[in-house]
Image 1: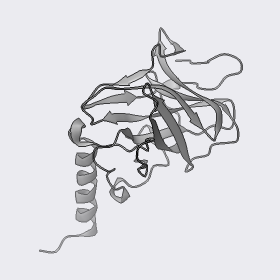
Image 2: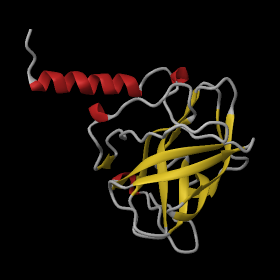
Image 3: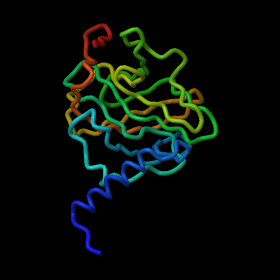
Image 4: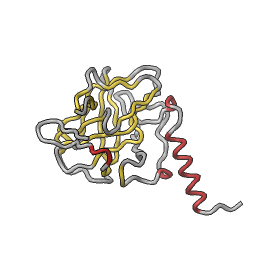
Length: 195
């Protein structure tokens, strides 16, 4: 049976969707810990941001890795921006991220939106064992404070998170433009978040 290019494209997109929605314990994520270095992976987001790559060109991350999947960062000229995606933990223990760093910003902070304003997450950001923690505009997210140079759509941004046990995880997020939800992750001295 001969398939048309449209049929092949439809099959590829369906396969990518199934991969992104697979069992949480299946290890859809990437990390680089102090014990072992694993290459990181940035997949496409679910339509909220523009400039995404074709999902059919993405390969699944290595199994068993804690990390960020569907990771993206809002393109920004300066000040601050935020990282979103799915933090996945296929391990049999909880992982609590307490700090982070990146070459593209002065500091990394773990934030949540509560009562319409951003604030640091007290005690760190915990990803329960075998589960996924959604990072999204208007909710939990990773802030990049003091952006050193413009982050433009298409750039790959590497963020290193450290857990409560001192292990580090290297995450990759693709920079994309974002216009939805009226979120504003830019500001001067304070943390600005508007609806």
